Image (cartoon, rainbow, N blue to C red):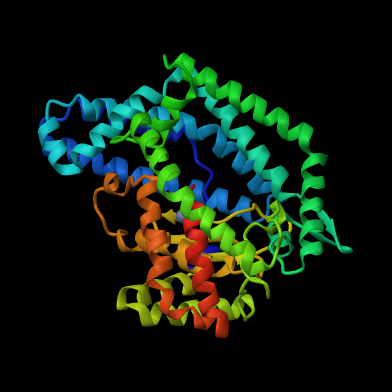
Length: 422
Ligand SMILES: [Zn+2]
């Protein structure tokens, strides 16, 4: 089925409530581990449906934030998401405290139980209104950023499309583009400051109501950091400072020499070559086609994956007005397919969508038949292994996108990857 043909169904919260009430009661009364696990599979089926609808609704809002129907649905999804988390939490407490815990641990894995502990500490009925407000604030911020209209050189650009000039070859143009971007942010600074202020207060309040000192511990829980915490992150940061920052300083110095500048300024960031950064040579359609050829050659698995993605129209990558900024991959459990959202802007970043976001999507595709949903509860750091690895796996195909500047792209990519870490 093509993405555009997938039906969207408004989530009925009475139905959700009834489903979880019955599930909780049935699960409590299960007479064996097998019986309880069968009920758990019903939970998977129901959540697959809910997540598919949420992801379709959010996606259709993201591609055009001014479209009224899905803007309302997005507001609704923001409201119900915490309530559903609460239902899930109540249900998982039954699973966690099950007399058949050993059997269930064997089935869904011990890590899942560790993650439940993090969830139990992070969600509570008393903070639901705060969680709803938090979602609404984030959505409001995204909408402000998505609706940016930045006048530059007689045209109007959104932030993604302006990036071409922010990293462009002409230094005066670049400086002017940064000024235009800065002017835009100054024009909305009052609104953004209020959102930021409210978010900080909101999250601190959530943390305190849950018994944390501040948002940091709660934030770690929400990122499912079940095997490392602040001390490990602090130590990692220290290593980055000692080992990586000196290397990045060398790269920056080399960049300054290559660009022939006396001093590197903020508007010179992310510019690597005197003759400009390598950019894809083709149209967006040609980039997509080159991507398809690349994945067909890379492996039988990626060949199957890319054909499914393209046939299902599971990409929305063209930069447009009112489209949410940035890029991401998400997944539609009932159709067992990932989809990719991005904003092509004519820079090398477009190719990163084909490598990086497709790396995420390929992971989703490869694990589509995994029966245990918890096995796909990967964290951001795990997910980035899939996506960033794909950037390197595809090094041999970059001439398809950059022609005779493929080598420049590889140099830029490697330097950028290193610079990114600090
Ligand atoms: Zn990523």
